[in-house]
Length: 201
Image (cartoon, rainbow, N blue to C red; front, side, top):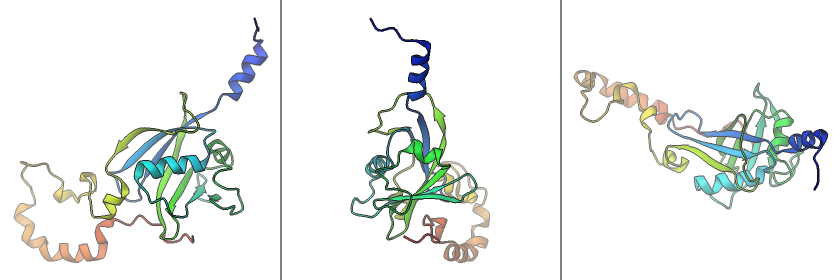
């Protein structure tokens, strides 16, 4: 029978893959998130495929992970082609984090600059297969619904945020706000901006 020494046990512990918790969000929208538990050995390409499937993103688009450090500075760009930091199928999540990544902007459609934000929330206990990132928590519909005009309860203006049957304290003032509301709607465009306008594909 093989006996494990203290040093061999220590080495096994050191080699045990890390598991990270990632939170996927949309800029400016409170009513959406997805939380994943991901093995550190998982490549960014595998992570891309899982998120693409879960969120029903198109399959025929160029993709890219823009890696940001804690200050928001770019520390890497990983796509289907080598952009100077390696390709998405070469870089593991753990390797990207060790290189200083605190979050990603994941462009699921580079051409149209459509993206979601992925924040590394920390290392967690557990065991997740590197080929299958695990979806742990969900909130709200998929991003396409927000593009089509869906507005979550959390994202409604305060004056509209009441449950059925509750009295609206602003009812008496509705007429006063009619004209002003139309102007604000034109200027704000419902606050559904999710693109990174400054990013070149």
